[in-house]
Structure formats: C-alpha cells, structure tokens
Length: 177
Image (cartoon, rainbow, N blue to C red; front, side):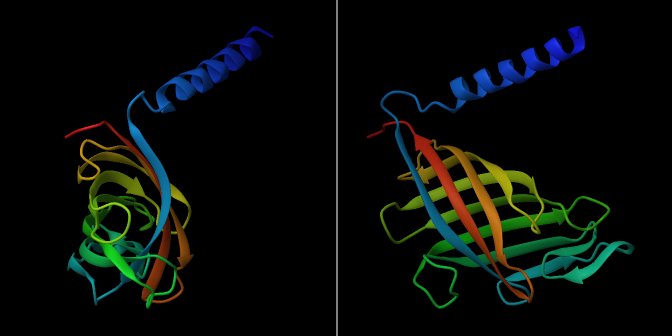
C-alpha cells in the first residue's frame, strides 16, 4: 500500500510541476500554429556519411544505418501538399543514434519568412521520424527572440522519398524592443 501511495505522490507532483513549468509568464507573447515540413531525400537533404551498414536498417526515407549523418534544407509549407505556399525552411543536420536505425539526434532551425511571424526557432533533440515526437525550442531570432516552447512532429506521408511531416508549434517569448 505504501508503494502505491509513493507512486501516486510522484505522479501528482510531476503533474503539478508540469502545470507550473508550462504556464506562460505574464507579459510574454504565446501562440500555437501548424506548418508542414516537406522532406525530399537526395533533393533537399543528403547523406554526408553512411553509417555502419551491417547494423540497423538499410536506407529508407525515414531510417538509415547506425551512425549515418545527413544535412537538409527543406521547404516549410502551409498545407501537407508539397505545391502549397512555401513560408520558410527547415535546415540542419542529424545523425542516426540508435542501433535500430530509427532515432536520429537532430540540430535544426525552422526559418519562417512569410506569414504572421518572421524569424527562426532553434531545436536540438532526439526524434523518431516514424511516429509523433516532441522537440524543445532552445531559442529564436526575429519575432521569436529568446523563444521557448516545443514542436510536435507527426509523419503525414513517409511511404516514398518525398516525406511530409506536420509540425505543431507551441511557442512563447518575452517582450522586447
């Protein structure tokens, strides 16, 4: 019984801390919006170093051998359709960091050049591109100067070398002049 009480206490404490930590500070701007990452293997992203081909998966649009390093400069659009309006780009690098070939350690920037906001959001996180995953925002420039928050990416279509991800951004940032 004491073990159940301890577990319940830890869960309640975690929820309480999250509520406090996730609250947007007074005076900050906050917004939630969605963009679409249009990933094109060997068109806008390229393999720099091929990993250990005898470990993990072969090369697919969403996986690669352990240790594989890629760079990318992909368009960001307003809808899942690749031909929809381009409002910016997502640029960065990644390295397959799990033996199964699915998880990748990413360092990337989303640059918005059209629409309501203009500026960059910076991320660094391990992400599995085959499922919904979350990455923390570690800063920003322009309209997003000193931004915090997170992005939730969800695969829309990962069946071909032309993959699309829905990116839901939950951002807040301090006032500045």
